[in-house]
Image (cartoon, rainbow, N blue to C red; front, top):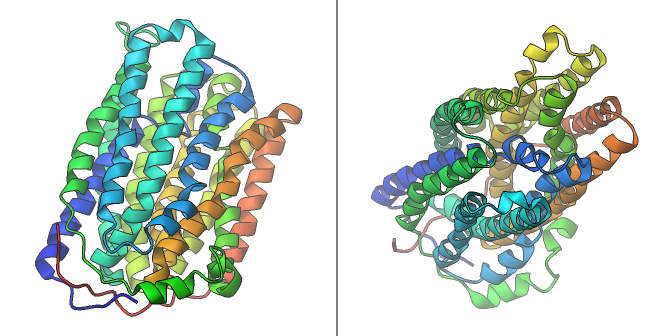
Length: 429
């Protein structure tokens, strides 16, 4: 379906640098607005409702994941994916609007501010999710499999080191005697917008490999509908079962920061330490799992990441049952586990998906896979309801059990069978 030729070495080097720069600054931007620490802490300033706090991750995941099957169907037959990537960058201005709204005093009206916040968050996640289908397809076509893990690992390591600085800056901002709420969060949202600038420039500079699409062959692949990979590809089904179960880490992740500050009585400035711990873990995991992915395949990365992800809810459970004490000071361990999970998601699950997907069906696999992950949209809200109906003990125990089931599913997955290396016609900017 796609005609192939040899990769242009100069474009490979150029695109490698562009992808790494984008990865680094995107990571820095989101470190100032992490949906599992910073954003729940922001919402907590306006409400103590657990379901509303859990809505942060629900909106983030739902708007990012659910529309991707539509985007995949839309762009699959397009020889150039970069224009759709560029269109998706528009939602990044949402954080500038949030900063401006807080500086203009909208924080004095909690209900209005929360509504505006969730609308902005949804716009960003929606546009970024639509752009990600094109981003992953371009990554798979521009970077060979045996170099992809290394490239992603480099981005995660450098971005993680930069994120350490972000965690320190967050602690300074939240602990500053000169800045009070909501100016603290207004400044952080503005810094998100600033960090997105070099990330966007790097994406603009990408040189997309050109492909020639056989429209008749593409049309034949559509005859069985959008769910064809799920129906016909057993490897894809197994991957998605594992990915959904391990992804249930989202059930508890928005409530760790609330648990730490409200139950274990850690100060709000501890949020900066949580972000830093998450970044340190991301650095280490990016370096080690990148090597594992390149040498032994992404399947091993998934197994390692799944096993270590269990540590987060298990430690939170033990700390809660022990009523804090010295364990409270080690609470960043929870965010270490989150950092490992996030690194293994990119190096493991996504890299595995890119390898099992046929070249001509890659956008469909990406879109369907991420849309299926939309079931996790409700996980944080369900976690909030579970917390209000039961306890932190139940919430953390259930989360750990589901991740463990995902680990068992990962142990039954075979190695990713790499399709013939995608080669391109021409080079186009």
